[in-house]
Image (cartoon, rainbow, N blue to C red; front, side, top):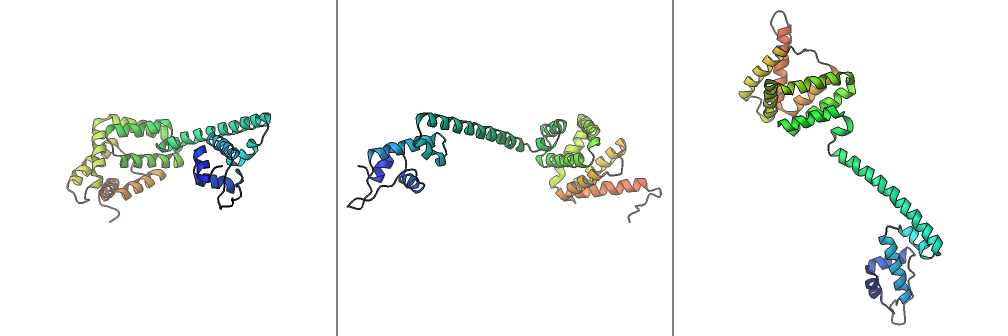
Length: 248
C-alpha cells in the first residue's frame, strides 16, 4: 500500500495533482486507515499513470474518465476524435501566429505592398522610426480619405527619394525633430524647404488627409511645428497680390 506521496512519485506527478484528480473525480480517494492515513493500492498507481499519460498527450481532463473506462474500440474512436480536435486547434493557433507575426510590422495589415515597400525603403535610407511611423499614419489616412490618389502619390514619393537634394532636405527635417524651435539651424532649413517648395511648385491647398497629416506632424515636434507654420505663412504671402500677410 502506498501513501499519497509515494503514489505521486510513482506516477511522476505532484501530491497537489493527485488531490486535484480526487477533487474532479478522476481518481477515487481511499478512506483513511486506522492510523488516519490514506493508503493507495497498486491499481490506483496504474490508474494515475494512465491519467497522467493521457493528460500529457493533450487529452482534456474532462474526457479522461470516459477513456479510462472505455472498451478498446471505443477508446480508439475517442483518441481519433481528440486527435482531430487537436489538429483543428493547431490550425487555429497557426493562423493566429501568422496574424501576430503580421502585427509586428503593423503597416502590412492595413496598407498595400507598394506602401509597405516605401516604408522599408525609408528605413534603409536612414529615416528615423518616428518619422517612418508618421509616414505610415499619413498613408493610412490617405487610404481612408483619398484612396484613388495613392498610386500617383506613391510614384511621386519614390521619385522624391530618388532625387539627392530632396532626400537631403528630408533627412535634415528628420534630424530636426528634437531641436529647440529657436535653434538658428532651423532658419537655414526653412529657407531650403521654401526654395524646394517654390522649385517644385507645390499646391498650397490641402486635401483632407493632408490637413490631418500636417496636424499630426506639428504635434510631434515643436521644431517641426515652427517649420510647418513658417512655410504656410510664406505660401500665403506668395499667393497674396499685395505681398502682405492676409492673416495679420
